[in-house]
Picture 1 (cartoon, protein in one colour):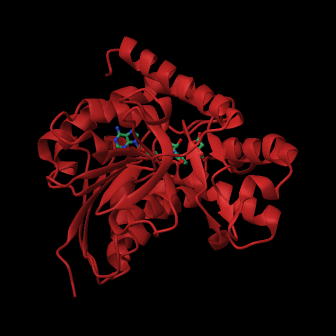
Picture 2 (cartoon, rainbow, N blue to C red):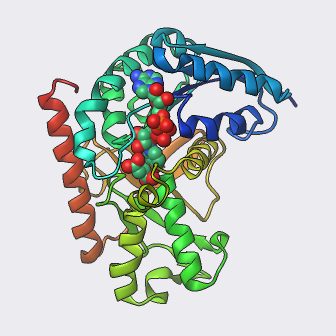
Picture 3 (cartoon, helix red, strand yellow):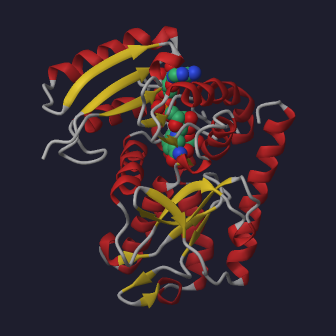
Length: 328
Ligand code: NAD
Ligand code: LMR
């Protein structure tokens, strides 16, 4: 059965993630192979021409599901009727640059985008912020969309989740699909905490299947610093893997998680696990009926508590910084 089209807005469409993302969206991988798609590409004026070039290529693919592609530098127009907003456009971190430096540079982008989503997006709009610092950028956008339920604003930690799956699978010599209930907690930054104490492989707790030293000294830093390692190696931040994770995030949001599993996403905290209410922090989440819900009732051991607290503190500090800049 063919469904009615979904309108998807991609900001930063002429960037490297945009180029890795758009063709997959147009081929039907975002929500499912029966849903036609209308693409709206937002760029800054200097990059509109490049986005138009990508739009020409999208047309040339003759994707059966692609209804239309519009390119604009007008934020209002870009979010008119949007069902799914992929907020990718931001200034990527370059070699040697700290994430904190990005707050001021990027904060201004997400305020007008939040306002435009509030005023013009569809009732059921869902937003994924990819552009860094993703959690706090999502917080800024959400703060400027008071008529949209806060839970519809999310930040991407699915790439971290996928990285953690891949590292653990390689260590244990298992397939990634044999791992359940892994989760990233906190910020999409080097302080993030990939937690193996609830993760299961073949019915056993993953933390018991690996040496504690490996978990502490190799696994956690490798996952948490993977973004920086990719920048070091490629001379540019991750693009295809980030696009892939964005698709995973939305696909799961719309289609749900498996009964015995969960995933990771930056979602608005309701105070669960001592994470201050209102912060957009990564948690283990289940998707049901088109909503992400924080998995409740998990026991947090001391090792994990310390790491979650440190990452959450970084989010608190980021919120303070953007508050002082008048951005939330
Ligand atoms: P890029 O520099 O290649 O592209 C960014 C694009 O955004 C550019 O084309 C630029 O013109 C555009 N842009 C800037 N301001 C804009 C605005 N106000 N409206 C619309 N477009 C705007 O960067 P990229 O490699 O595509 O990465 C994009 C962002 O994603 C970066 O912030 C990067 O750090 C982040 N990222 C996040 C994750 C994650 O896991 N959350 C992973 C990888 C990258
Ligand atoms: C990543 O995790 O690959 C990116 O967020 C890195 C970055 O800072 O752009």
